[in-house]
Image (cartoon, rainbow, N blue to C red; front, side, top):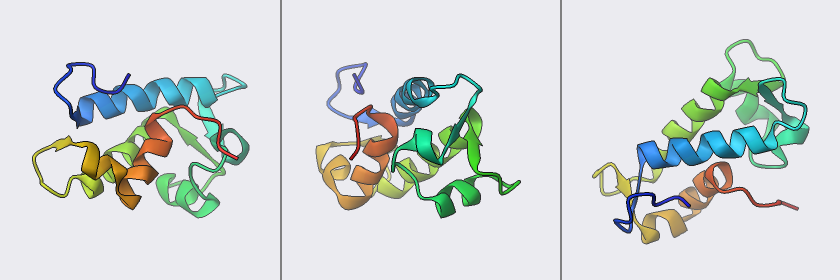
Length: 106
């Protein structure tokens, strides 16, 4: 559940909490990183490299959550530090949802 305080919006803390849960679920080998295969299309190889200053093929939990933070801020068109359904339904909102909602992506 994204909206843990039931205010019909998702704030950054809720997004990061959900993102951390998705990270843990995707980390199938439990090595504390996500590689391209584990990310299952949520990020491109280029986005992974941009999120990892060492240009490795994986992301740590902190790096993954930094991308969640960056995408959240990009989606927050009203600049109120909360995302409503319209913002989450936008194309940029959908790119954030891929990181904070566990779904099998094909």
